[in-house]
Image (cartoon, one colour):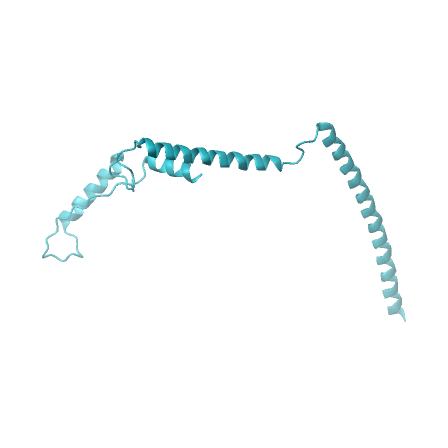
Length: 160
């Protein structure tokens, strides 16, 4: 899995979302402030340039230059050795995933049983459920009887 993620990350640049700020490009800063002026106070000229830059960024769609994207290799073609190594890693990753899927399939209930066997088992379980429900109802009746006996004893004690 990691091989697949790494391959996608290194060979496919991220896309920009329309009407969203583009954080993949570094924004050049333009500073025309006077060095003798107070640096904490922006000059009117600097404020105007910043406003114009922001307006241009808001109205122009972001263009992605692959050279500006960090951690993006400049040449996406691999040498034969690197390609073979990555291909081997991806193949091993596929084999591991296939084995994991097989293990999950093996644990599924009902495998190795025919439809008739499964239907017979369902009928057995339904009959067992009916028996347990009957027994539960019998115990409910017994509980009610014992509750009446205890209530009678408590009321008998109060009369004395």
